[in-house]
Image (cartoon, rainbow, N blue to C red; front, side, top):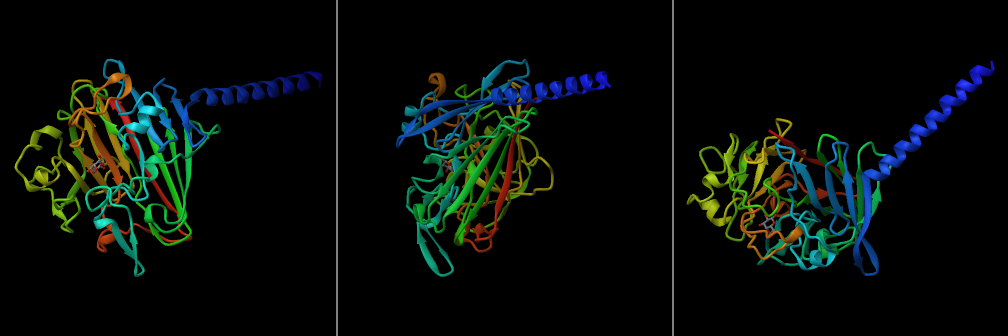
Length: 375
Ligand code: GAL
């Protein structure tokens, strides 16, 4: 009898020890440091380390992904995304590096849209249009930070309450993005939004990638496979014309692998208007992986998986070398590319595009994954 009790106590002690140990491990998987202050509030830099020992860094300012350190085919690790070393540089630097973009990613034509007969005016910050939710959009606000200690993998949830009429958009919106860095080297981004008034939402992440390592040359040799049969051509101010164009037979067809630089210089109307690739693809959404990017020198591969209908392929055409990021790296012309999952640009002004309207009582839920590996 005595022996049984002793054995039971021993098992209980072991269980308590294992769970405490797990909790300590979870704590170590996410390190929270102060990055700076804004309006008297602390801005954090969060370091997430997964079991294979790979590291990503996030900040709650703009809910940005600031660092993704993954190995090449020889096991050499390097950061492959754009960001800055200090909060001060962040405030002065490019607004969109790694940012969560909202309320409406990409452009809204002539900075206005109509909902139920009411015209909403949003700030024009890109010629006549509104870009990425306006100058004070979600990329520039401080999100609340919650480290998810009970998660199996390192995970951080950022939440933000966007007030009614912020940047001209109706409704108080409760937004969250949870970043999970799992042991398969996937950044899983889970978005959730609700509203108290009818509104429009298009949320994305604007990380720039260079699989050679951020600041190491351009992305023209990155080989892209993008599962989309059509895209939305744009006019001279980058607004979709409404045409849905088949990619077949054009330099926009990435259904079979092509290097970004292979056809980017062709005298094709949309490459001229976009100054390169800067277009929304209509995803086929038939296979698990929507986009694959392979960089042959390092062997690094990025796969993007999304439940969204569109994907903006942007070849870094507006980068001009004026931005100096991590460790003094210079982000030159076409030295980074973005794959922005989401809805089609200017959807609120195109009734035939998939709707971006969110009603009270509905919950917008969406997931996009960046998966890193080597080949
Ligand atoms: C992209 C957009 C580009 C440019 C960039 C920010 O999402 O497609 O045209 O505005 O953001 O520099």
